[in-house]
Length: 220
Length: 225
Figure: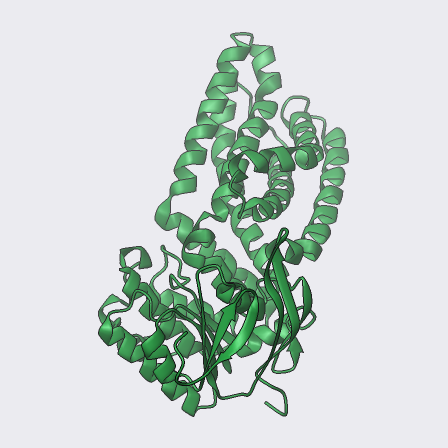
């Protein structure tokens, strides 16, 4: 990973039409850290994650992932990241096993042992069922399996605890801790205050388009 | 990244979706058949008129079906953020476009092969001796149509008025492809004039090349917001 920060933001601005959502964010996040990102609905948490995932272009400023600019070196950024969408990001007419094969092919990774991976996230019995038969929690669990299979250096998680039952949330926390032990950096946008703060090395709040660090004892 | 493999995987994903949902197949088959029947009914009993209109009617049916197919091609992608997830993998945007194009073209080509015999029966046209050239026209015409349709469907995929905007945006661009396709297939089926058909086919190849290069090169602007 070299000397680069996992995430570096320099005066990052993003708006939709005339509405500015991110008003000049500055951040340096070291590799291997787990950071929780809080903020009210519409504060720009998902916007920030999508910018880092190269799905949105900044209106101004720069965002770098492991030293790669998300606009100029988007392809290099995408080699290092994995995302977990709010609703799982899966295709309704594919099976869990087919998703893992598709991801592996697109990421040029060896096809993972789908049975082991899906058993790990509690989907062993649903490996060959179409995702359209899944509950929202099962879709999220499939998202977790795809996250693990991606073997990425940076996880960008959008509402990771949402839709998961207690057991699923415990599983997510365990996976994040295990990933951090392997050196993976995790940025998670969340409303799940208690769990996320217990999991994270630091907590940030997006408020009025700006980032501020949350003191360990303060409530968001 | 082996970009060619990525193209094939994206195409496979779209074709798997279609074989399982059958949403586009049912809609386009029904719509094409209705278009062909209504046009034949409007033209009337005059055999020569019917035979002369056969290839035109075929391409009208294919064009309308093609719009439905293109609009549907992003439907599955938009559900639950699946396309977003696909676009965060290290696959060049051009490979995503070409994969979706390949699936859409395969679908339209299959549909056109089904529609040809139906059209010939309904319009009383005789099967041409130069049928390989008719196949080439169908392949090049549907390719040109799919090139533009998949591009513009991507452009309008996130818009609320996508169903009405897609034909408005793409039909002016696709007109040269449709004209060349109608003329080429008409020359093969009705006039048996291969020389005339070859002229239009050369034009189709030119259009396809230009659209293929342009659409592939600028597709990343379509999917990055």
